[in-house]
Amino acid sequence: MPVVDTLIRTGGQTLIFETLAERTLALSQLAKNQNPEAGYEPLLVELLRSALGPCLQHGIRIVSNFGAANPPAAARRIQLLSRELGLPAPRIAVLSGDQLTQPDQMAYLRERLGTRFDELDIVSVNAYQGASEIAQALQAGADVVVAGRVADPSLVLGPALAHFGWAEDDWHRLGCGTIAGHLLECGTQVTGGYYAVPGLKDVPGMDNLGFPIAEIDASGALSITKAFDTGGMVTEQTVKEQLLYEVHDPAAYLTPDVTADISGVTVKQSGNDRVDVRNVTGHPRTDTLKVNICHHGGWLGEGEISYAGIQAEARAMLAAETISKRLRGRLKLRIDLIGATSIFGDDDGELLRQHGGGAARDVRLRIAGAHAEKEIAEQVLREVTALYTCGPAGGGGVRTALRPRLNSISSLIPRELAPASWSFTE
Amino acid sequence: MQMQPDTSMTTVPLYRLAHSRTGDKGDISNISVIAWTPAYFPLLQSQLTEASVHEWFGFRKPRRVTRYLVESISAMNFVLDGILDGGVNDALNLDTHGKALSFYLLDIPITVSRELAATLPDVHPSYQ
Image 1 (tube, rainbow over the protein chains, first blue to last red):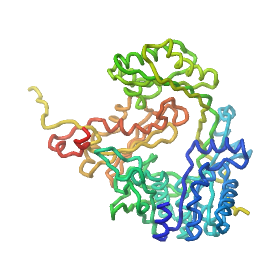
Image 2 (spheres, rainbow over the protein chains, first blue to last red):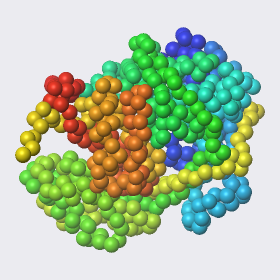
Image 3 (tube, rainbow over the protein chains, first blue to last red):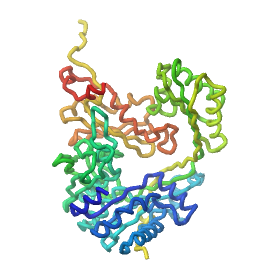
Image 4 (cartoon, chains in turn orange, brown):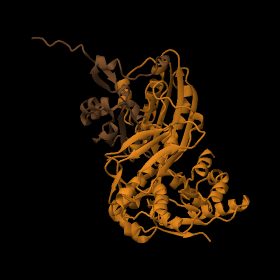
């Protein structure tokens, strides 16, 4: 792993795996419901097989949210992996408190969300926990810290807190460490991933993008660089795009740890693939934690069919009209004309109506509909397939899919109702 | 007196002045606009307003558009509330996150002098 080799060569302290998206946690919970020893990141062993030995040997701590819905099981699997690899047994800390199941927690959410809370077919309820428990575990000597739902930047702030001993109300430094985490949280999105536009924003070595590395000093000053011998790039532009990614008010980026503030941030290229980030600060954290409630959300039915040649767009639109009439009133449909207009428009189809009849000669019609009842969503698939024999001429390449949906709503909970903790695995 | 059209001005798509990335949280999309150089920032500040961006995305009926300025990096951040059909889990769109929306904004026309237009970055001719 180039990033591990780079950490070893440069005296790096911590390797962080950020593997948890919003939906991933609900999927993990469903996996745990099937098998009590599942529910952690499915790629856990693959991620750690080559990294665990070198990290243990060189004192590089591993911190991750790869515990997902089942951090204790992930810890057991890591212990097993260390035995399989003939490594000394690592000290593994497991975080808890993110999964909300207690009656007082449920009562609070019910009060806040009203009756719709009772109508939800809930899969998982998680609070976003912060960096404190990660820092405590590292200071107690953990080699590996396994978390479930913690705020992504907390994975980086935790090691910084442990290393520098920053006070938990040192809002300025907490803001800096949090922004370091924010810049790292989507992996290569700061090293040239998700950046390239050929001829305008070219990125070298896209096939081997390097993972990012944050260098943080005791004052909170930070620089972003990347693993040696990798592709991609760290430039002022790549850093700026990631600084604002998923941010609303730049003066108030809320995490469980701090209200980080990048409203006066500066970036400066200070070397090849190295950018200094300065003038970040922070303000007191809020009294609440964000909560994600994932619930079953019915079924999504989708079907696609292609038309090419003369009147291709017109034939695709005739097919769409035909299906809309055949399914009239049963469920709301979305229609896309891939190759003419598809993802820019919203589900109401205003952009498609504005597009009118175009002259594209190779388009793919996509029809999607969602419904609480599987049988009704499935009708979308049947109708698209039926276009072979009872739709416009020359349609080909039908593909259909029916899948269960997981929906989510978010809320807030007072900190004192959702305390976090940690412990070493026996 | 009849107004003469100002032939010293022209329009260019936003991507010649700035780059952009979209993020999402629930039913809210944020779209950054980062000037290629600080010199372009005042132009963006005066023309890329909450009202003009709201109008540009009118077909998606945003509930509210808020603009935040981060002048220290010559950037602005647009927060468009209610344009993701409920967000990543609810929308029927293939792009439930609205990841592509920055590239819709990058086509918005910005009025610049012909003199400036001639110097702005553009897609390399070998791609055009």
